[in-house]
Length: 184
Length: 149
Image (tube, one colour):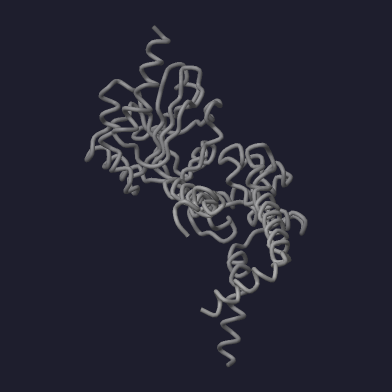
């Protein structure tokens, strides 16, 4: 078998082409993260909650009170190791003026407050979801998770897992800038 | 020998033991069956390769509890599934629904089987035809000489 035969009888190339095609699919598949499941909530109205405020547990805050402007909801907990990874990104986001509400998931008030004292508080408010009921309504399955909600109360974006500086720059800040343009 | 048999028996029994470790009350056996069917069908989103019945992840426990409450309050199986899909997406079901985005998933293996079957049949037919080609006496003589060398 020489090269000429490959050219004149391309049939011999078929297994090679099939192999390359399968290899490309597998390579692409390996790069996908199977833990990231698209949320059905994107493009929908943000689910409502009415939860006590961290540190002032006799006060409650509802989604309705938060609706009306652009905001970000970050689901976190003091026991969540990955939450520390994203903390700097959240602080950065808050410094850029983005209002971030925290949803403290299945945590104790003491631990949550100590965590915010130790690492800095990027949230303008943190609500407490002790039982995880609100988190179920938001389809949360892996803390931390971050939602971007527009002025109409529609979920524009969801990020599962710790947010990176790239996520802040490439996903969240563009949405924030666009919302500022819209509201003039 | 008896211990081996016991191990084999227990390894089959474990899902049942697991489910039985939660003591739940139902108003009738139909409701109980609906609950058991649901936690068997719904996926634990944290562990992904387990259903709610098999998983002890915190979220799986919460969703079992939520399923239980919904079943107890008389919700149908479809209503519970709808509730879960609205929050977690189609992936929460072990059997994804048939719709345009899942056609390839459902019919892909069948298409692959048909394609490979057709290719196999075409190939074997063609090679049978080739084998039937008669050689002229001169060619046969040539072939024999080549083989003898």
